[in-house]
Length: 465
Image (cartoon, rainbow, N blue to C red; front, side):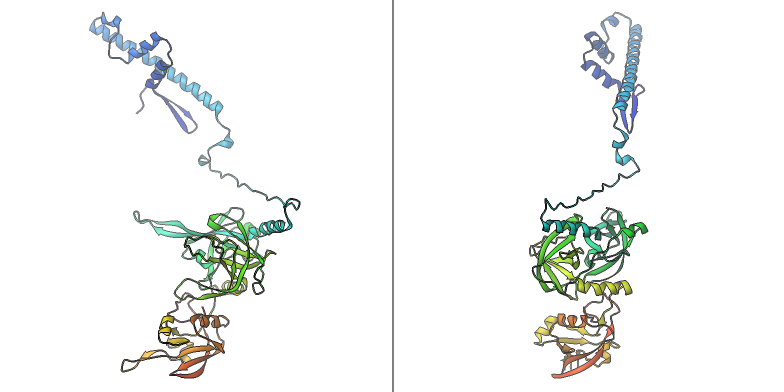
């Protein structure tokens, strides 16, 4: 607790405390005269002065008490004067209100809006001018997406929201629909979207397709802000040529709106999505444009600024998540149909055969070529068409079910062939299945059903992907 003679000078949010002991030390240190320094020193000494030695004990004690009281009074007066002087000095030297500490103000500092200069054809080449304009025109269409998860604190057991990852996305239309990769928002309890003006808004998942790694979000913002959004210009991926220039825009490593340039390194690639089903994405675009973590869901553009693919994966032999010059993008021709279904139905509607198939390694061990049917559940399209599954007879011997070898004349050797064949079909289509039953070739007609649960695994009802 402060003593009775301590004084406080309030200066903004700071406090200056003056104690007699500090003043005494400063007084002596500055050497205000030997006699005065000695006298102040004696006020804090237990040894009586020479004059008080000739006095009686009672008078001597009273004399010392008077000297102590007088000294304390002078110190208190000095402290008050010093505090007042220091307050005046600090108040005159205080910075203006514009430099006040922002942590003590309720108002947020305004965002710094940087207007990009127009490219000068005299300083830049024609190719550089085109790249700069492409970036400036398409950057407002690209957004930064944050995946927010919920975790339970191990000590307090409280649920806390924590960031799980970041990615990219882009505006599909002028209604606030954002397209991104499904793995960017997988397992998210909350989704935050940062726009080009650095404003952050929430977004809701409309639907997605984990097998094709596509998701569609709905931006939740003010009407005026929605009118400012700029949809991306759609192109085509079916006519791409190896060697043509491409540009990738995204948010690698959290660095917003980054442009990288490259070429189409290959077309018609096949990329397996993670998961038990192992469904391949066909006609994937390969590019050497730098794609790093955070670029997922970003745009891959042609030289005219039209969307030709969605950046989704990289070949990373090191396992460190860094670009190796081999990146992959989902072709826009495949994305169009998926997004349209999600916007219309809230999910991707896929056809289904209604069979459970054996693992590929089992088929190889048996020396078979095709898809071995383990089960055709009752009520499924395959069961209604008479497809037989694998079972054990009364003697315990394993009786193999039908082996699927073709659909509508297309050869089926592996799982991916089955997925690729069904990918071009829709529920309600009637297909002819080529099967091998008890060593004999047969053909069976099946009317495809609709896959009810898009998250079903490969060990349940089999759909196209």
